[in-house]
Image (spheres, rainbow, N blue to C red):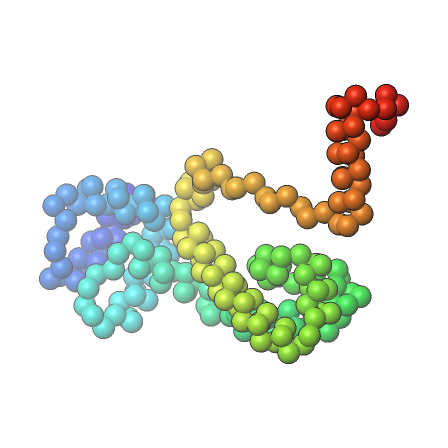
Length: 207
C-alpha cells in the first residue's frame, strides 16, 4: 500500500465515521498508515474495512492493526488449526509412535513438529503411560501450541521488510548443546583424562 492508497482508505473511513477526530496532517497520517500496511493492497484493506464496519457495534474508527486483524480473518476463512485439532494429530501419530515414529513425524504439519520438538519425543510419548500423556502432556502441548500459533499470527502481520530485517536486528540465541548419550559421555571423559595425563607429563605415547 502506498501513501496515496492509504489516503484513499482514510477518506472512506472519514465518510463512515464522520464524527471521529480528524488528523492535523492528513498527508503524514497517510504516510504512517502506509508504513504499517506495507504488505497489503488497497483492495485488501478496503475489504477488511467493510468487514470491520459490518461487525462494529462501538462506533469507533479502526486502527491499522484492527484492519490487519480483519484482513487475516478474511484470509484464514476459519481454516486455522486449533490446539485440540493439533493434539488429535499427535494422538494419531502416537498409535504408531513406538516403531514408526519417524514416518509419523514426517506426516505432522510443521507447526505441530515445532511444538513436539523431535521425532524421538514422539517415541517417548508413545512409550509413556497413556493416562499421563492424555492429561499432563496433552495440556502442556496445547498450551505451547496456542502460544506458538499466536506468535506466528502476530509475526505474519508485520510488514515484510521488518521480517527481513528481524534476522539481523534480533538474532536467535544459539541452540543449547545437544545432550550426549551414555557411550558418548564415557568416551568424552576418557579423552579428557588422556589430555590431562599428557598435560601433567604422563605417557608420551598417549593419544
